[in-house]
Length: 174
Image 1 (tube, one colour):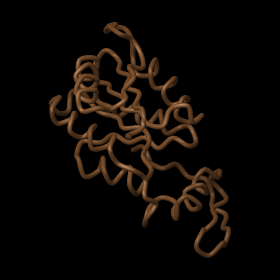
Image 2: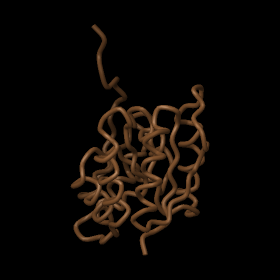
Image 3: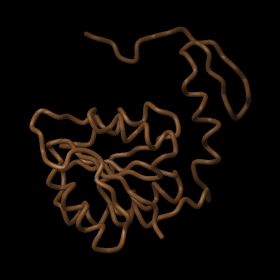
């Protein structure tokens, strides 16, 4: 049986959330509404990203599908916690690949980017997939962990050589 899915949404994604809840329940998924039962015009994605992301990071929730207007800010915010692998997805291939190879545990959808049937199919595929670990993120995780090191000390995970770099801005203003 597929894992229980939690689905929150802020005001910009509320209608799509309602559609996804009904569609996923109709095909037999265990889905829990996570958030408000009616839209509030002044809510925003942090009202739902924080509780859902913490629930996933703690292991209390296995998978989440979250909806906001664009999905961009919410997916960025969700990835701030360890053990959370969130991504804004707009196609079926990425939904399947994200789970099977990258152990994606939070799917973010932008309500304004595509229609409800498209997002419904993407969510259904995401919820049915299993992490296989083949050629995936497990081999890459040790290298990704070093990215959180402060600028100035960079370790090449392939050679184990540590180099020192000076801090420079990522962009220059003209």
